[in-house]
Image 1: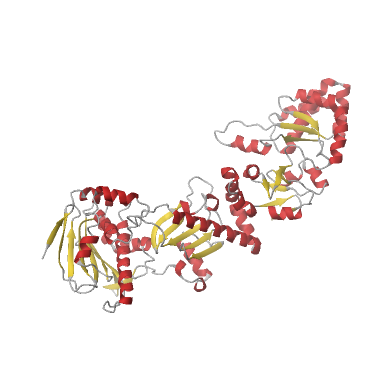
Image 2: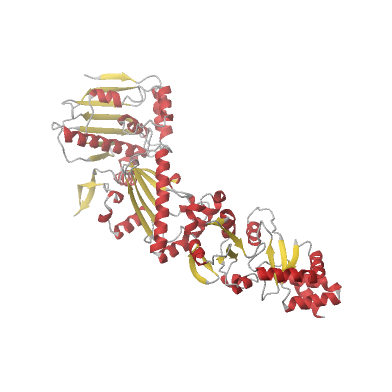
Length: 616
């Protein structure tokens, strides 16, 4: 007997919400219906384990496209539905009411993913009529459900003989915006199954027409892989398997530098399959680069790039996470950013960090290759948010030093440092040769003090954010006072009185360029150097002034003279004989110091004129 049941008066608005607000792509309907079919087979399989009246069969999901009738049928041999279950499950929306339905949208614990009626209604995005024929494992009778998804649905006796469910979608007419006919094309269906449902555990089958010996034959093909690589036991997966999967899944041409395969079970259950590419993406350091990991739930594809699963400083990692513990409300497309996701993200971050530390310890050359490719990500990660992540990343960064071109960590630097050395010293510049020839490096070499060599613009900002490592402060040899030789300091104190008039004259002449002119405790073989006061360094000044739309920034400049150098002695004597030479002397010394520091002169001609004037 045929029964017609009316949807509640609000059902039209609710169905509109289901098909226009929850889902963003029409093609999602196939993923939803296949996932429901998989859920139904799961239920039958588990029921058959304890109920001998429910036979176990070769489970499958089948797609039957019909281009001439413009229909698509999805068949499963799962648990099926009784008449009451049809009303209950396919009436989910009808019985909800607008208020209750909207409330369920907002509930953090509203886990409706397993309810047949919710994802089922995505069918009305592409169909103006849906027919469901089903026979439950608990009933001898089958039933037919039909609806246009607008005002009512009917339930009548069906003729289905075997257990399971068949859903036929009568596709809408094509419009300017959507080509609904494509959902009867085998190539489109194969593509959608590969994209969204490749790892459904049951075979998804479809008859495909092929030509052999000029004859057309139909062949049953399985559209999905079924068992995801990441769900296999690690011991059953070869490096080649990982590399092949990586290249296919992420459109890469080279093997990855590192594979991280992690399975976590317990209070939180998930699998992560992660890859570190050998080289950064072409747009890695641009705003167009999108970070994120692929997200699956029970093997069903949910999201291509979930940004919350990976921190910015590890954004070079590609991969996926599959978890059955996620709260997916209303549709598999809607993911709540809840505690489970945050916990998974935290675990993933720790796992990546642990693997990098292990690589650094056990595969030093591989790590150095990684570091050269992605060091800026780690350094920016330390600098950002005022160094809040420094504890996580500081042991992963490396540097050349004044004693060796081989990279070392901060921990290794401290192990080599004399016990009485109070600071971790560093220099900044574009090349090793320039830094090794800095006037400020003279005294460090003489005293056998190792200096970190920093080539990247972010280095100085990073050290400012870190402030110290294991409570040992960072100190630039190009900034502020360097207190490493008490005897030298005493000697310079004595010399200051003798040079006071000369220094004061230079300071007055250069008052628009420098904050101070004084004798140096750090110079040995060089006559002069320029250093920055506390705060903005000379390297920071260069970087900040290169930024687009940035305000002009200037570091405090201090000119330091080596009182024992022949040039300084000669120039001081020249000044004492003829004080009018002070302008030329000041310009020569200041510009020479800037050149040594690698700072471009505003007026190179002025330096030549000063030198010419002094040689007359």
